[in-house]
Image 1 (cartoon, helix red, strand yellow):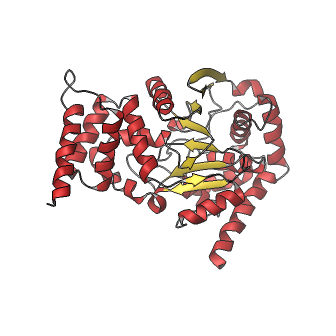
Image 2: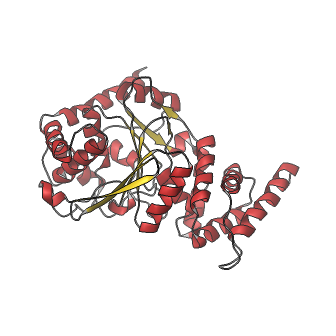
Image 3: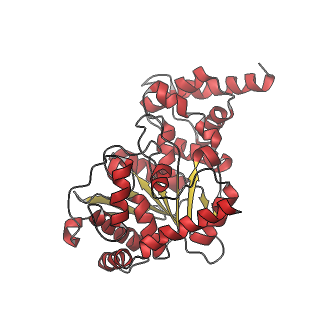
Length: 356
């Protein structure tokens, strides 16, 4: 064992003692300590036994806001960066569970296309299918639509963002060091605190609206505080389908807009806007593709959910003056073919890369 590795493991022991000492004696880490702990895990300086022990102990105790902020600091330091060009509209940056969807049909790839058709840039991130859900992911869904966004360099993604207003950061391609923790999810059988971090992190640096999914109320309030410490000034939290950012149409939508640390609770009712129905269940990728292509033209079982999601996010992004105006705008871009044309534009851009 090298001296550097030995020093790193000794330092990690101090972090492990804090989170793993039991209900009455464990202590929260400082922001700096949490950043260091994650850095030691990602760099491989912490041993596999130490990493496994830390992840399960931290999950049992639940990460504190300053700890999530510290871990976010490490992701911002080590992870990929996307920036907007001068004069580009501030993007919406979506934070969704990396382990994907298994129960409900995803809407967010289609919402992205509708937003792009209205001039609203979008940034998202994710990986390949991973534990514990092994659900369908963004890279799978876009690929099924004829848009393969895997295997691209970060420079290509950045150039595509400037040209098309859309960037998908694919963890295996752009943040491979973070992939090193995936095997622990399988072996532990539980989501580690890094799964919470993934909902809060965006690779985009600069002005943006960060949209973060949540399931349980304590998770939401913890996100507010962690992101306030991290300097995020415009945040939207969403109790979306399967913990993501897809707004349900089968129930009321619980959201909160947080500006400069001040939260405003917003409960939205799809029934009041003609978009109420049961949320479509997930079946398989081929069925989803067929439904998705229909929805992009304002038809089929996903059309109401797409219209609702596009409308709400157009409103939150400031692209529509009201939710009612967002409904009209979303309906228009779907029925006049602009959302479908956006997919064609991205497909043509991707094909152009292959020809070069």
